[in-house]
Length: 270
Image (tube, rainbow, N blue to C red; front, side, top):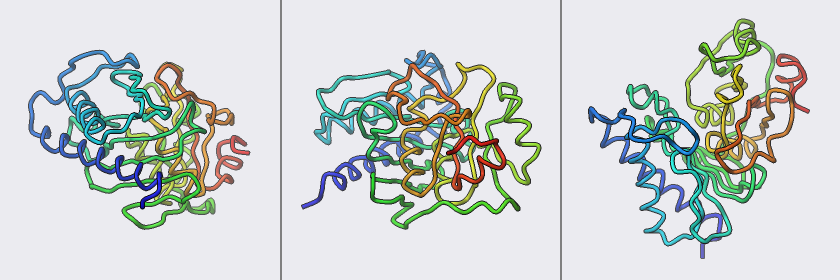
């Protein structure tokens, strides 16, 4: 008989596949980028987000689980359960609607806050790749164990959120690094640090209201932690107490090797 974690992962995998079908079916729709509502997080909800979220809710009913839901679009939905499923139906919507290959569905299951997330799954909607982790069970990509990489200070690849809202500290960091990428999909960027494709991920906007929510990072946080990495906010404070909701936002410094933060960012990780 499958253990609880295996059953939970099975449900999350099926939810991810349901969203992938929606994303694929809507790829040629002229209305996929239409704004259909304002989400609970205060950001616009595009048609593709609404379709993905609806697919997840329908799949949860079909699975017969009682998990509560927190989503960027509809906020919190009480479904009678003890645990909460934190979802970003389409992370990287701006990429998805332009057919740029950097978008995911992000799914995390736990209680109360980031520290209480026990299971996380991120499905790359462009590549069909799935990252997942269970507390204490390591991190995985398509059935193969993944781990972060050691940072040597030569030839690093750093993922940094850039653009006009980025903080001066972020843009200065980008100017010092050998290789910088900015993908616009937090859950995918955290997963890339987890598998050693990148050394770190930095998200710090000058305006606090433009930073990340738990829905953006909950699944990636668990995956990165189980892969041997870690994350704090940009000032070095732990993220474990960030509530599983859409009201609070945070900056993020995520690393595969804590030495990156000590030497490059300025002592954030401890």
